[in-house]
Structure formats: structure tokens, C-alpha cells
Image (cartoon, rainbow, N blue to C red; front, side):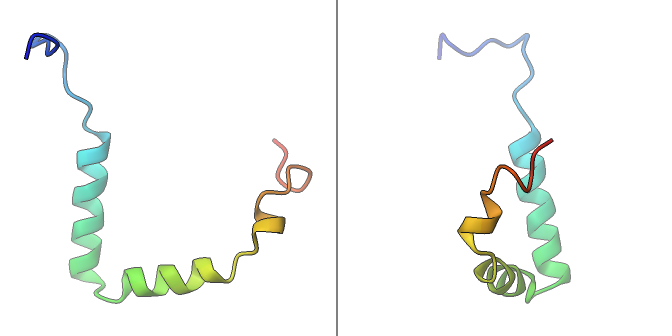
Length: 55
């Protein structure tokens, strides 16, 4: 592909994250079930309240 430059490294953050999540899933089989259950308890009104989470 002409758009690909060989002197520029490809981004590795996505691949690294996928590898880390895969390893965590092997080590903790119920991890994603637990995370999904935890995120269901977050209300959008409080999570996106700019006043509560201003930096």
C-alpha cells in the first residue's frame, strides 16, 4: 500500500491492550462478566455530570 511508510512504527497501543485483556481473561475467566455487571450499576446521569468530575 503506498500510504504505508516503513520508517514509521505502527501504533502498538491497541495490540498491546488486546494482548493484556486476553491474558487477563485467561487468568480470570469471569473478569468480563464481573466488569459488565459492575458497569450496569453506573447511572449515566451521575457518570456524565461535568460538575462532579471537573478537572
